Length: 427
Image 1 (tube, one colour):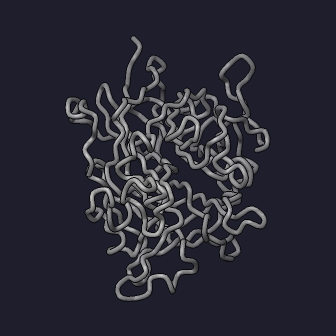
Image 2 (cartoon, one colour):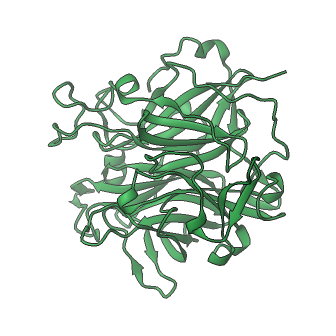
């Protein structure tokens, strides 16, 4: 595990561990927000040099350290490499959704690829750990051999829905014993491995092994999604007066994959299957910050001007008292952090909390300059993408530390990262 390069970390410890949203008594596993927002609290500011890699979550070998990873996923689960890693709370544990996953050649003395429908399928894992500074021990959903098993998605009539290359689980949430996951699937015409073009919501009652389609969600502005459950009464301005609601931030896929602005939708938790009950943020009322809503997705308004959003995550952070959003961008280059008092904004200007040249030199491959590459990919440069906030943070009075997964492309693995923010106040 790497030690933070921020010399001030030791001075502010111990930090308090906080869950992003406490469980509501009326609905186990459903996060709820504070009943009031502290409008006197200023925006948080990223603390320079506070960003560091905590550990490499996946793979067998950490090429930075030369040691085996904590999870030894090659030996334990037949998993060589993967990406993504969106996380959410489910039945008292943190679930992880990994994207196109590469199996080891053999597992337990047998061919680890022969029985898989496609070589690069997805994987699902969970952790019971609550201290991300100690890394997190993962347990994967496995098949009869003990190797990781890929999730299966079926239509309401029982027909299989493809989860092949570039078709991935992208966000999830739990309600009681039900696990709900958004899948980004499909490809542009004539591009069998092109960027996914639509999203589907599925539901599992067997811990993420099999999912049944609940509904098609979007083929336009909500192909990449980040979901969160909350109480409508905690957020005046929503188009629903009360009850549990699902917030869904989204960005486009297909030809606009990673070239999109972000958008916001909301729907009652009791009507997940009813597309007619979904409302879309349609901008602010003239001269105010009061949100307008529309039942039409084509009237969804960008949350802010951007042309680089792809995979994204958004969570309420109780230490900062703000909604935080992460996404990777080309300009400004790196992992961008924005924040807002309300899910619809107004959103702050971006702060770059991770930049590969500044923060990733020791664990992200650059051709002809290091030995961090996957075998056979020596000429392929690393790239940061898919920064997904964990439902865990640490804080004290002056500092909040956020934790997030991030994919590095080469090596084709997921790392656990952390960054610290100031928590100033206005008196």
